[in-house]
Length: 161
Image (tube, rainbow, N blue to C red; front, side, top):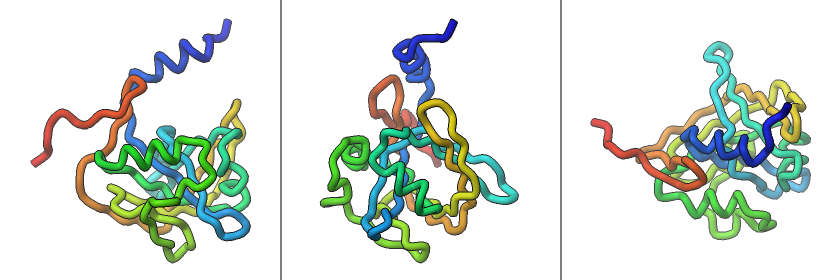
């Protein structure tokens, strides 16, 4: 017996995650991206991360074709950026400040952290593809992370010294 999708989603909602926007450019050089909470480190040597991308995501074809992506970890005050990239809008970058990196990847301004990655493998699993990327460059900002928990945006309850 397999668990129903709604029950699975409800259970997973009890796992707090950071919020990321995964970005790349399409074959015409236009920036594209999506909000993703399925992100994790894989290895320190070599430095590898993974992201899971829904096959229905607008930017899925570009992420596969381009062979590189950036992970932008959002700050607490970037909830609207997360909501925009989680939408089906075609103009997700409209009004969102970003810069193009040395690897020609769109990096969202003021993100808490950014990783520029080259895709080293892909794994088709269910309705998602797991992209494993080798981290080529990192950029670390300051602030507190945007958290997603039980279907809502949240924040850390304490402050670090």
